[in-house]
Length: 352
Image (cartoon, rainbow, N blue to C red):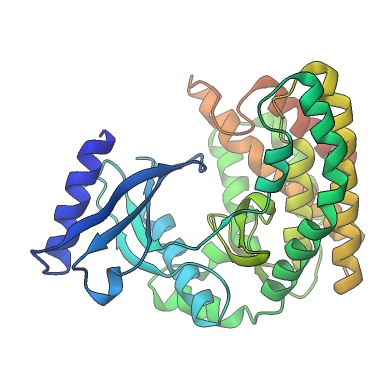
């Protein structure tokens, strides 16, 4: 379904759902960059009922994203918003993929741009010399971004996870969907179902080294691309597809693993300097978090390993089915970086 069809059908759907025949666009849906498994559109309505007033987001998922997942994400959003956390309210959940070509949600739109936008500005388009000059400016940006990043994360980890688990159950879903044990079980089942024998040593290591620590609410992909800011203040956190009740080390380890392993598209001559800058950012982030809230180093390494294994599973499943690589780690280079990081954090050798 193309964007023009989405625009027309979304308006008709909302007008019927909210019994508002006069509903019109004040600003039609326009694509926003970001999201590997969903198309993101920003829009606004005119003559809208209270639930649809103000700037809105349409998150249109790919056809393979199931109803259970988007229902869970909506529960996470609305439960955490009810606890006062900075997260969009979900106003509409639609599980029929036929309407727009995929299941979708409509939620409030947070103001601002990702904190990582500050880095993108200095590493933007230009010559190699321009990019190199931008790299030299990055350390000066790290302090403010890291402070905001950690402040926002520590506030999340201070929340009581019990209301979220209860909300998932009250929503008719299995509470295991929001627990780390449940996530690990699903990754393990996927490895067995698709005969990903090369990942089995990683699965066995994860099963035998699982830390026993107090759980909290974790985002699962908590990095500056998913934290929005405006006017020097954080305005909220987006992209909650990996939310889980787990030790706080889950969020710290996942952030480190994701940033440390993602393949970056830069000229070869800048690859080593950029890797050094990224390593500096991660050291600063980890030290800043540890200064605010104690963390277990072994657990951080454990969850780095887990995140890399979990990232590998959909990539290898897709390849086993004959599909082309997609997502941040869909390339041979992306797979290699995940495999290397698993060995560095756990000593386990993966065959991918």
